[in-house]
Length: 168
Image 1 (tube, rainbow, N blue to C red):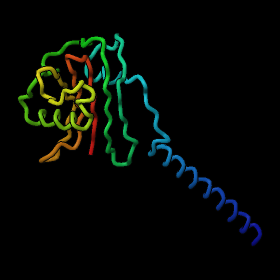
Image 2: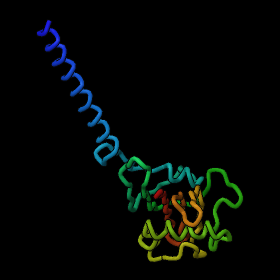
Image 3: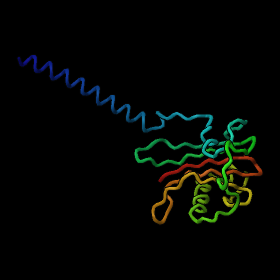
Image 4: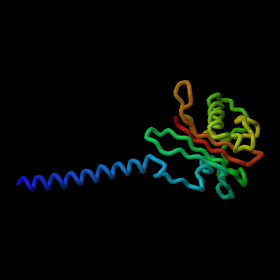
């Protein structure tokens, strides 16, 4: 009887060890760069901006944060477009120049700093320049500051699109 209990204990211990190791490997794979896969063709950036995907475009540079448990991230794509045309035009979706809403203005400024707007827009540093249009997809605000946003900006002279998504 003791031999049976000892054998059962050893078998169950082995199974539980393998299960714990498996869960640990899955956890590490899911929340580290090892488990990440990025699309070299970020069509979703064009879709978010309602920009036609039937065109040639090229990713100039990008950054994708590794996944973390609390959702904090900074992802951005600088994309060279062939044309700035919309899939289905909607009024006031894109705003060139200065924003009338101070929250939108701050979101444009903050995201442009995070994604190095000057690098993407050939030296342009003003996110509210008359040459820069933006579409504010979403903003996450906590009382006095922006905690997250998805902002898409287009630079008319370079025909480049800067997609920025962040959460802190």
